[in-house]
Length: 266
Image (cartoon, rainbow, N blue to C red; front, side, top):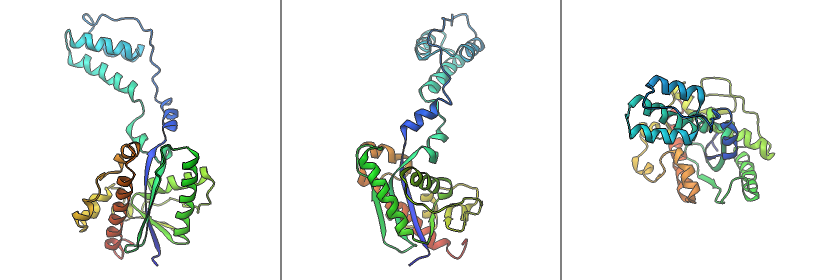
C-alpha cells in the first residue's frame, strides 16, 4: 500500500453563505434618488452623480436607455453599465471560489499512483437536506478510513481541498486530523500538495500539468466537464455521472503527476 492517499474534491457553492457575504460588498443603492439631465451633464458629472448618490437599478436602466437613445457617449454608458454589473453581482469572483463558501458533492480517492480509484458522489437534489447531511457525514468518515495514518496528496489541496475537508468535518462532527498548513513548499508532515511541490507559488492547472508530463489525451477526453468551474451547473441539472467522471479523471491526472514527480520533488 502506498504511503499516500491521492484525493480530489468537487464542490458547489453554498448560496446562503454567499448571500451573507454580499452584505460586505453591497453598495446600498438609493431607489428614490432624483433625476439628472443627461443631455446637459458631462461624463464626469454622471460618474460623480453615480458615485455620490448611488442610484438603484431602476434609475440606472432608465438612464442607460436614455443615453444610448440620445448622445450615446462611451464614458457615460460604461459608468452606468459598471454600476449595473456591481449591483447585480456585488461579490468579486475570487470570493466565489474560496473554500469557506463550498459544499462537497464528490470525493475521489486512490492509493498512490497505481491504486484503484473510488469516487463518492452525492446524487440528491438539495444541499443542506437530511439526505445530504447523512451522505457527507458517511463520506467524510469513509475518506478518513481510507486515509488511515497515511499522508494526503492532491493538487492545490493546501489552498482549497484541505480547508474544505477540515471545515466540513467541524460542521458535521466528524473526527479529523490536524492539518497545519505553514510552508510554501507544499510538503507538510501529513500532506503533499503536488502543485506547490513542483511550482511553488506559481499556480498551474491540474489538467495542463498532467498532459505536460505525458498523460494520454485520450484519457482526458473522457472528461466532458474539463474544469471544476462547470461542476455547479452540472449538479443543478442532475448530471451526476459527468461530475463523477470529472473527479475520476482528476485522480488519473494526479496519478500521472505523482508517478512523474516522485523522487524528483518529494
